[in-house]
Amino acid sequence: MAKYTIKYDRSKCIGAASCVKFAPDTWKLDDEGLAVQLKKEFADEELDKQVKAAKSCPAHAIEIYDETGKKIV
Ligand code: SF4
Image (cartoon, rainbow, N blue to C red; front, side, top):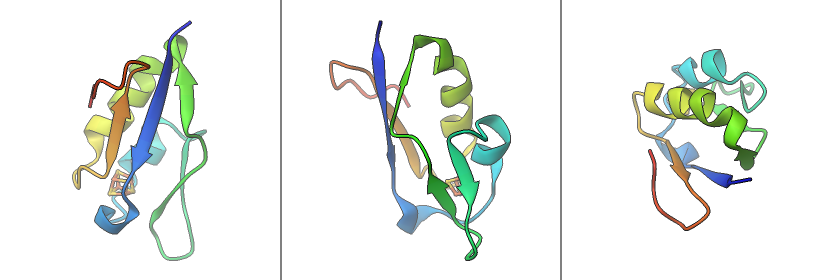
């Protein structure tokens, strides 16, 4: 089973919350209105959801890498 890694750059986050909409188990907004990452890895069955969340970020704060280290988003 493939493992994917999520990399998040909070300094880029503008609190748009689309990541929370697509993957509420992985992202939430904190008191400052910025995203907090609740999960750093996920498996195949979440790929679609996690890619949607990452691609939806207008600030490009979320990146996803596969287990070979290749950047997917
Ligand atoms: S979608 Fe991007 S900018 Fe919006 S809250 Fe999530 S990480 Fe921040």
